[in-house]
Image 1 (cartoon, rainbow, N blue to C red):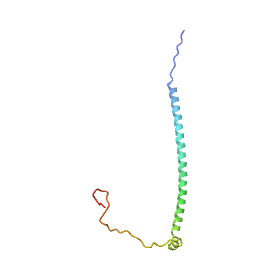
Image 2 (image 1 turned 120 degrees about the horizontal axis):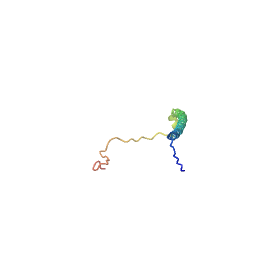
Image 3 (image 1 turned 90 degrees about the vertical axis):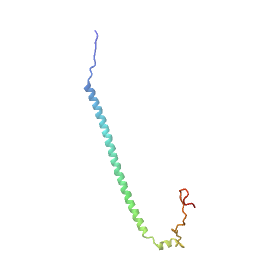
Image 4 (image 1 turned 45 degrees about the vertical axis):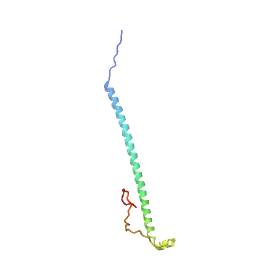
Length: 109
């Protein structure tokens, strides 16, 4: 006597496990993206706090710069051994008729 057996395919069971695996993958991706979002929000808040601290320091430096700038006068310069320039030398704007050019045959010196 010979026994023949057939394997009965159960497609509903395969579809169920496939959908369950996809659902687990989607939950894993959702958790990863949610974690990444939270980390970025916390990092942004820390950066905003750091920027506000730098802004306060910058304001203090600007205030001290302006207050020091208002204390500079001619007497302070003389006390720090600065002297007046003997005679200023200025450059005239009159052209001599000659010019320098990068174009060929123009403005030869």
